[in-house]
Image (cartoon, rainbow, N blue to C red; front, side):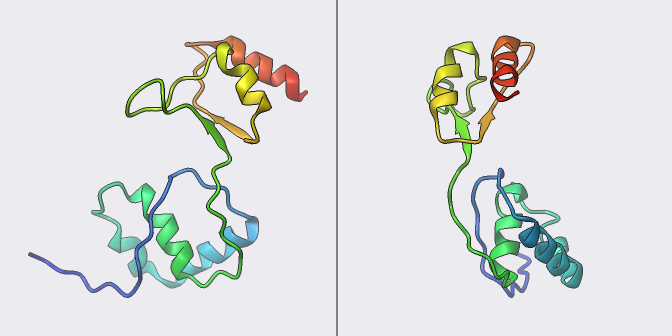
Length: 121
């Protein structure tokens, strides 16, 4: 078995994140200075759930990290995948503390999308 030398701790989490401009700028500088970090993930299974988290946590970015999801996601209706939100979810979505919703499909239910657009206008 081939073993690679690893000079950092791995971290993981959701592939949807909310990053400040400061964090993104520092993260890009870290990646430019460490091209081997990017190469390390070339054959990684599900890299979108470890790449950014590992880079952020190992790059000494002077920022606070808060593990808080800002997306309304209904995982309870469809095993293994988020429910496609419809008009029946509108009230819960709008009353929630979340800033974003996942997931919408205009072919499934465009009414909920239109209602959200009208509410935020």
